[in-house]
Amino acid sequence: MFHILVVDDDKNTRRLMRAVLEAERYTVFTAANGEEAFEVIGTEHIDLVVLDIMMPKKDGYEFTKTLRSVHNELPILMVSAKQLPVDRKLGFLAGTDDFMTKPVDEEEMLLRIKALLRRAKIANERKIVIGRVTLDYDSLIVTRDGETQMLPQKEFQLLYILLSYPRKIFTRIQLMDEIWGAESDTGWETVTVHIGRLRKRFDGWPEFEIESVRGLGYRAVKKI
Image (tube, rainbow, N blue to C red; front, top):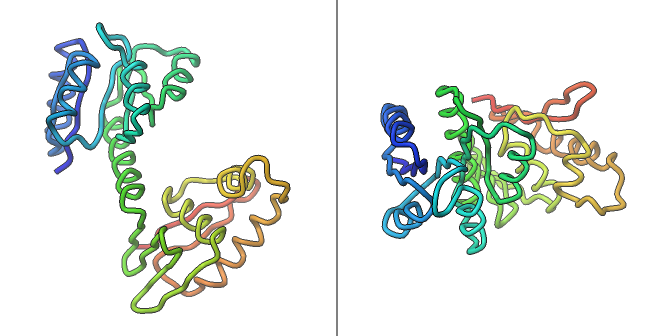
């Protein structure tokens, strides 16, 4: 059971969020501002925070900056009436993981929460499991039914990021920046080469495949 903390100074918003989340079988805690939120985090296990920006005492930006300053990677979804691009930028600069504007679409919010929780689970365990396939980030090993493949670091990282966000399209430049670094002198063509090697390695594995998206880039697709 996941524990979610809703932080908002509006009582009606907290009640609504609680009802929506509890209907999805989440355990919900609430706080009226950033200071109260830290009190909850200090006494309860929390898996994700749904956070308003404009609050008294300690607002959403301050809360997020403080949390990140102590290397706490708790997933945060900012939900705010602020709609300007600069507000979103400030949120991401502070350290939020996602941002929605009010009034929120409840179904979309729940989908975003599920995605954030899934990514946090992957990050914490440093493993991805797809059916009978396991990717172990710490050992760079991919296993399936006793078959083990230890990949070169860049190949593993490429496969890992694609499978961390199934069906998300990554451009070659995005993958270059993420894996080789923005300052790398390596050309984007190396991504194509590594994709080819991965396809050859895992040809015939039914659990996933890497698709080319014409004119855009690549995406991984889970088949089970």
